[in-house]
Length: 255
Image (cartoon, rainbow, N blue to C red; front, top):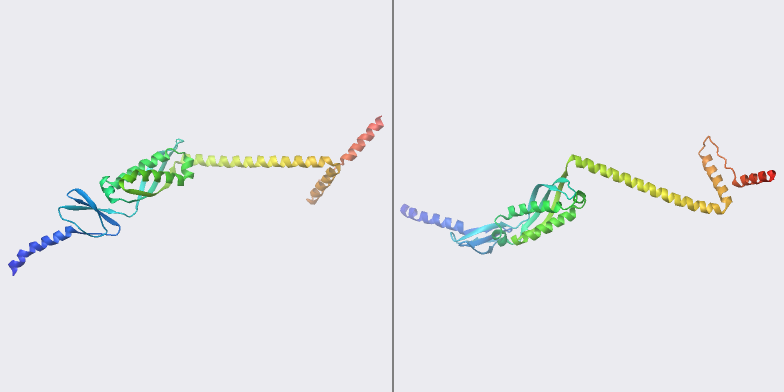
């Protein structure tokens, strides 16, 4: 009995090793790129996969979205400002065959392409554009990456610029620029108010000049306002018509 067990034991071990190398199980989000004697023969999965040991090999690929953090990049903007920018990229494999065959390391290739594209695109824009129009820049970078990675069977779903870091000197310069802009707007608004007030005063002068009695009523209205404030100084308007009357009487006396 023992000699028989010793005879069959190596066969059982070989059978188990054969089954272990022949049977593969792929999860729902995985695919297997199959090579038979070095030649591509298809993509299989998910589920149970049977391979011919020593003849067929399988390369696993993950179809889930990959989140890749682009390292901070030193960028010189179009207006010669040095900034450090980092971003995050979301992409996934759409064609496992091309992702394995067309490029040696699709993760490394996508990473390097993302870094160079980030520097290239942002270098064409000024600092104000980087800070205010991130959505448009994200769209431009995503479109370029998606076009260049399409031959590798990769789809770039989204690109987000995370941080735009500038040095302390430039931060102070931007603060001074913002302060000067606010002062400019205040002066413009004040000048526009003076212009509108002058226009209204001119219209009022034209209306009052048509009837001398209206000017006298305006004097009385001003006196009423001043008296309501309880000031110690009393202002009494001198009628223009009375001044003209006295002037006329004086000329008659001289004649």
